[in-house]
Amino acid sequence: MQEYIELNHMALVQPCELSSKAGTYIPHHCVVKLDSSTARLRVVFDASCHTSNGVSLNDILRSGPTLQDDIFTILFRFGTHRFVLMADITKMYRQIIVDDRDAKYQCILWRNSPDEQLGTYQLRTVTYGTSCAPFLAVRCLQQLAYDNVSTHPLGAAVTLRDFYVDNLMIGAATIEEVMAIKTEIIDLLGSGGFPLRKFASNNDIIADIPESDKEVNVIIGGFSNIKALGLKWSPQDNVSMFS
Image 1 (cartoon, rainbow, N blue to C red):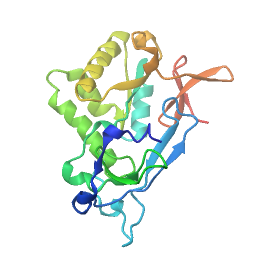
Image 2: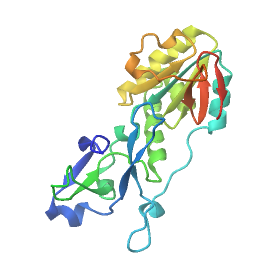
Image 3: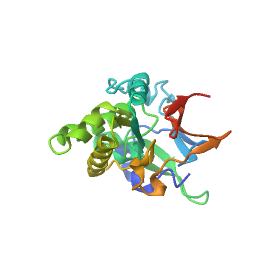
């Protein structure tokens, strides 16, 4: 799991600092997602695990309000466009650093090999598995849009309207419109440390995107499709379905 608990995303707590820098320990384990086109081995943090006093970290966290449209609205709007584009933010939560005062509540036990002593580490970025993580990530993403609406009006509007957490689903009536949105959204999100990947489209809109950053099409029974918010979507036919 070392690849997925990235060392630059956590900081070792020295034994003499445990009383001041270790507030809550979060259990973690790995899961395997065979249908993932990127990271098949992932780490899961269980902030809902109860501590010795019967209370979990998630029990005392405020999760924050919902800031984005629901899945149905996003998918319905996506289906109304003639030309469409999809993409994901690369490791969205891991791009956001938490305040030093809060990092003490995101501690884990870790060692790089069975031969080493266990150490206490603070997770320094927003952690998947904490109840407030979706709100924090989306709020940071939207603040980036608010701060750059004058320089990236198209990209800011899309960021505020057409994301479901880290999933971007946009479209327009012409290829030129989608291309303009793509250019702005890549530049806007890149400036805030939110690089996009897993691009997909029903046209040549992503011809200039490196193959490594494109979503992998899965062909089943002669039908090519990719995952889209829990559904299967065919770029060639621009048709959504579920299995």
